[in-house]
Amino acid sequence: MTLLALVRHGQTDWNAERRIQGRTDIPLNDTGRAQDLLAAEALRDGGWQRIASSTLGRATETAEIIASALGLEPPATHPGLMERDYGVAEGTLVADFHARYDGGVPVPGAETHEELTERALAALAEVVAQEPDAPTIVVAHGGVIRGLLGHASNGALPRPGERIDNASVTLFRMTDDGLVLAADERESVGAERGA
Image 1 (cartoon, rainbow, N blue to C red):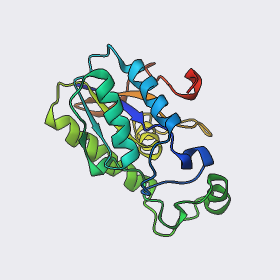
Image 2: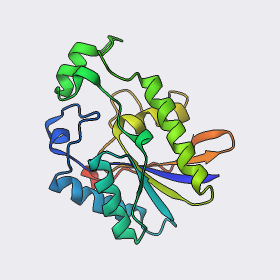
Image 3: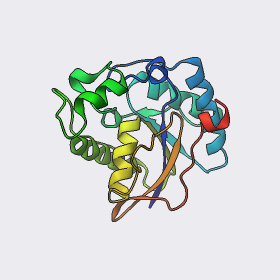
Image 4: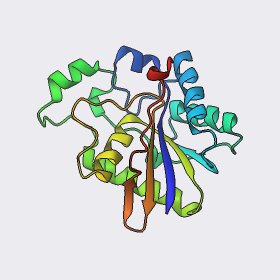
């Protein structure tokens, strides 16, 4: 059994503007970097031994900030942890995205939620297989964490309208039976802590 802390990257300007980022490689802003330091503090003394991240810059920088703060080796990157490919919707405002694509309307060129979740689960399994006994921090994206939460909770989480906040921490365990949500161990950092 491996303990995993899934961390969403810190804020970017597109997050602040409420734009769909997907695979578009938008860098962290100063608020995001401050949020990442808060996430590191929330993770301190957790016995974490290593850190991995998506290959997108906002995630790798978040992982580097956390690794430095916790005295961990630099993060290993994994393309399977990248955000959902939103196709033609990348760069659109979230409100416009929902107005256009809610209700099951397919997004041209976009990865499906099922494809995203399958890819993220495979990536986590690969990360865990490298050091199965090492508690690991994994920096990824809102869509990835949302898909993993849905999988691990049989669709009960996240609740309708619930956001995956920037620099939030969600704890999972990878067991012989697959990915499970660590009971009562979800913690959100970032905006709630003044970042």
